[in-house]
Amino acid sequence: MATIEILGVPHAYELTAPTSCPDTLVFVHGWLNSRGYWQPVISRLSATFQCLSYDLRGFGESQPNGKTNFLHEETSFYLSSNEGSDFVNPFDSLYTPAAYARDLTILLEQLNITSAWLVGHSLGGTIALWEAAQNPDRVRGVICINAGGGIYLKEAFEQFRSVGQRFLQLRPRWLKQVPLIDLLFCRASVARPLERHWARQRVIDFVVANPEAALGTLLDFTTEEEINRLPQLVSQLKQPVYFLAGTEDKVMEPKYVRHLASFHQLFQYCGDNVIEIPNCGHLAMLEQPDVVAAHISSIVTPHTQTEEESGRGGDKGTRGGHFRKEVPSVVDAKRLPEEESVPRQTEEEKVFIPKMNTE
Image (cartoon, rainbow, N blue to C red; front, side):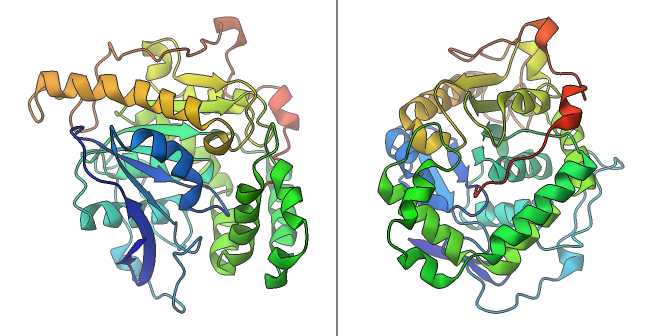
């Protein structure tokens, strides 16, 4: 493990050796998780791609040494590809998606990573989308795993935040010493039980997460403004964006993944940019690492080959955050019949209640 200080907080990260592929895969974990959850996928990809995983600020081993003093005037930005748009976002909180994307921008700059595909899980998917908007020349594409949404229902999200706050209060340090407590985490949010060492890691990450960061992300990622902003952000991204959904995911059901995906141009260009993984819940990278790694490779490799054929820096078909209309289709992607496509908000969605989870 190595660390880099970002705005006063040491960030833990792991970076594999460079390969012949010009793009680095950057893995962004979800809420109350840590970078280690990506290891089963990275071990299957690192021979082909350089891989970076890191702990988000306040999670895992990226813990503040004290109360961090961020300079707000230095952490506000205008999305370079959307000047004058509604995406002007002052950093009035340290825990918004935009603030975490800013952290990622600094990390990539310090590691001199100039060409990246972002792979984000759940909350990490939102951060990846924001980073793609904020940093289009560096980010070649995004793969969101168990991530979607973009529909704000006031009562449901108020309940979600209330339950979440109570959930975070039940985190005594001695909890991880309770015999068999990991058995509860073996089954939470997954289609089939995890190996116990992953359940133990979930307990540890749940307990050690910085209280301010855990609560701040819960509240700031689920405001009406942030939820409603996400589909618009996705619709304006020029990079390719793909979504992997677990068919048994009860935290982020496939129809809500497909809803957010439908705002991106790839949804029209190649029929679909959503891949459903059978017998998979909300932790696809642990439940189905072989499948996830295979899909990541099948998505990224054709785009990388297209870039090399067109010349890095010449044709903007894939450079600088743009992609060609004839993007390669993804193997085994399931196309949603037109009559079943998810509208912007249906009657069914009006009774959608977000599920409480530890991701």
